Length: 393
Ligand code: V1S
Ligand code: CA
Ligand code: ZN
Image 1: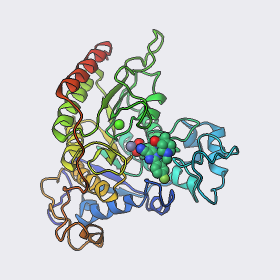
Image 2: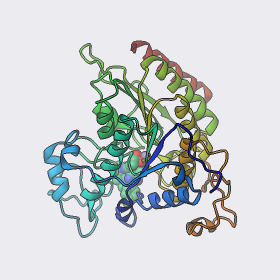
Image 3: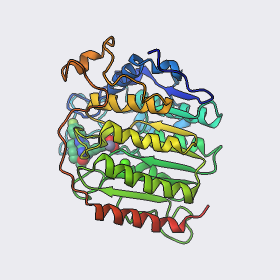
């Protein structure tokens, strides 16, 4: 604990709402809000909380959610009752609307509270960036990038990222959104399709027929018509199974480096979905904690104000490892933390099943075969660079 110090003249804030973890999507559902508890415990067991400003944000209000979502959607979300037995897609209930209910976006006890807390966490982070109280604001309870203005999608009901970006745009002329979740950040991309003040860039597994949500091809760069200032402001990096740390770092730095040079953002939002790690229950990549965290290190190195969001991540111990490590990166103490998970933490119990000396960085799970050729990745980089020729700030 003693070697974690507060970075001088640099403020990192941690926005965490302990009530979120009490919600349950259902026994077989991959989204487990208690991964947030595990992350917080790991962060605290290293004493990282002493190096940050810690906030317990209030839930977002109905009016704040209305900045992006429609009234009829919010009214339905706020009043719909949980179904006694979760139904599968074939067992369709005609009374349900807005893609609510069903297996991906089930109705559960306290759903609206859970959604408004996630919105509240990310809005709080955005406010601290806007008033310059934070250089980096961390919101692991946010990152729910699939939600649309009137539709739930892919475990996401309220798009906290869109709400946070809208808040940032009140003070920042240009915001860059980067998404390293294994899924395409379709909800955020769509929300800012018609503006040149937000550029979105998602790295994801792309297989239109077999992998959710099926969007985010290389050529999908925003509706191209001469009246749309947002054309060319959506960048997509479609990938195949098994990408490694080395390939990802090279791709990430080539793409983000060029975007920053051309778009010149004044603030950055980084969605750190941990389902791009090896061994994830639904992801397909081979990233290690180091490779995932290297993206955070690179973006931090750009020296711009930034919000770090959570997102996907379905092997809870690995999610906690990555997000604790990335919290250390934000503080700047990643080189000084014990590679073995501290013995005194009660959460040692969760990791003991792996080994007597569980490692922070060594994730669990089998690697996948790498199906990304260097030639294909080079073509992707070239396409992105060509796309950015249209962007000039
Ligand atoms: N991949 C995947 C996947 N797995 C599930 C799922 C599995 C078990 C359950 F009990 C409930 C759902 N759903 C999906 C995907 C949605 C992935 C959402 C990712 C969210 C994020 O990480 O990006 C951000 C938080 N849904 C589908 O693939 C849709 C189906 C088409 C197939 C699976 N069945 C269960 C639903 C319909
Ligand atoms: Ca992504
Ligand atoms: Zn995901």
